[in-house]
Length: 467
Image (cartoon, rainbow, N blue to C red; front, side, top):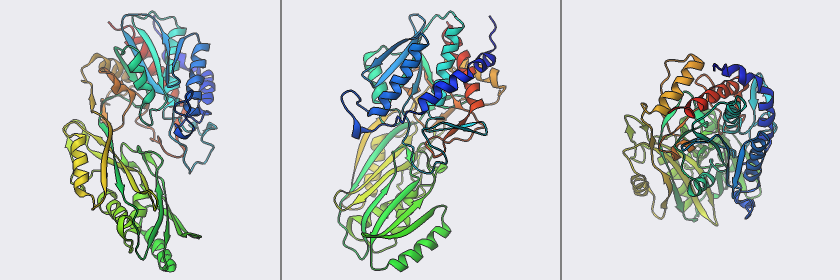
């Protein structure tokens, strides 16, 4: 049976966009402040999971909701299981949008919404790929489970729960990265750096706030400073902004002077794609006569972290010939007089270096009184390019796109694919398309999503019938 997958995808475009719009309208970022026993990650992730499972049940799939944390749609039978792992949570929307981030908008062929690219657009394209396989009545020799997690953008509580209570899949892919294929992912660990709260200089740091998530380059930073030198501070700030790739604003408030800096958000796996507003603001402020922990907080950011994603200033620069550079994103920055200062440094590390080495290296560079602690970590993941799953998926991609030159890649991002020994990330960002994941005005071209649906349909058919 010869199948024109592109034609089959085109037949389903209207239905796909309708279901995707339904999913995108759910603000599904994790919110622990609203967590309950029934919605352990907050109401948004729960609603998004329920919405997806209702769509899958409507389409005739067997479905299961596991503790409102993770769920799946199942098709076919077999001793082995092919898994497609997607996520229905998103990053917070943040500011800087030209459209409502939760009201999907198509402009010039591009679908704008939070989650359009990461990961609801690709995830639903892969789901429709499975739906095509089911609609066509293809005979499979593997069970297929389309599994959706609800906090991929934080600590993977949902997908970890799945692997605790369900059998591990034989092989699979995650439609949560880029084409042609990701066969290697760096390790991932965050370090928490804490400073005290003393501040008794001529300049007083009332507050400092920047960042939404540790795996996102902060677009905005705001500090309130108390000083008798407001006019000089304003003049210096204007001169600084003229020389730097950020914009900003200074206003007088009751507590002192409020300084705001706006940079560019980006995925934390490659901080060079963004402009970290938090480190730029610290770089500006550290020249003034702050004291105590406030001085140490600003100085450490400016001298050891600012514009240094390869951590040369911390003496931790490291590169692996296969997996590439160690990178660091300064994702969360906070200071106030009650709680002191806190930084979250998110590292993406290749094989050959360990989290303990990173923790030791950061500790050695800290000023007196500051401390560092290590969070949970994920080790580097690598699937041999000769593994049949890599070769089969690359064959489908090349056949459908005509791109015979692209090769499997290794990235700093982390996807659910790494939870399987034979797991990879596969699309849906094409090489010709701008990466707007974790940014304002996130988008994905509709044509790309339809091309991805076609690729996913054939890929599932191939993998689920491959001996």
